[in-house]
Image (cartoon, rainbow, N blue to C red; front, side):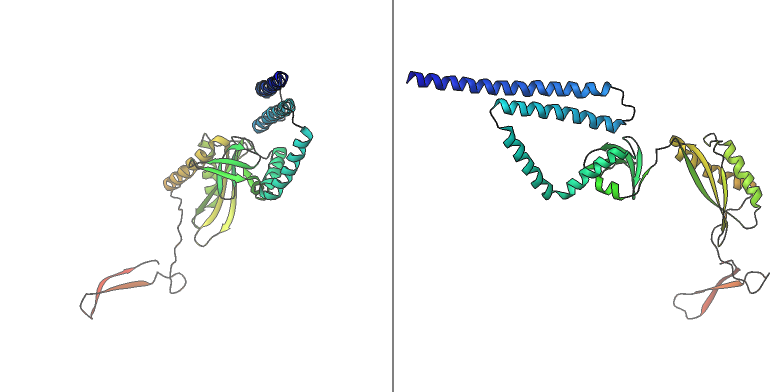
Length: 295
């Protein structure tokens, strides 16, 4: 009886020792994984962006920790072949149950390999424009300019046209301008060039571009394109429109608005229009005023 009790006590001690050893392996493994994942970033990976470094840090951490977890399970007496087999079956079941997540995961890997944008870039996806704050395996997170949080699945990122607005250091602002038919186009071109030259945000190289778009219903349509540094794009666009409007007003250059004129014949005055107003409670029309107008 005493031998049986002693044997049970010894087995319990061994079991407690195995549990303690497994816990020690997990704790030490956690700190080793933490240190290794931080130290790996000290290596100069010139071909990795901020997102790539974050993913590398996660891969190193979870890789080391999972190895330590397997070692702890072995100390507890688990058969790792059975564990790995169960994990494989579970992975297949989860894969069939979550095909959308698997598609997003694969798309996320493609995004990581292609790297069309990085964290802190400003991108446009469909009607949504915002700053990239996170690129994960399943989705990309954006913060819009009105401070909204937007999550876009990676599968949508692969299938949709994505425009990276901050990829290059300079951007072109296309200004749409209309002038009256009576204006001298060459004079207007020179005026626009002078306005661009005086704007400190406008780059001299590439040079501004003047494009005659065609003849509209009430104006000659012009596109005047100027270049700015990426961070000055909106400021340049706003100041250029303001300066063009002020300069045109000072020099008498007409910016027309859509209108229709009715004529009786070629080179005649507009048709005079008589306006009548009916007095309340009376059937007799009362003439309010007579005027000649362009409709």
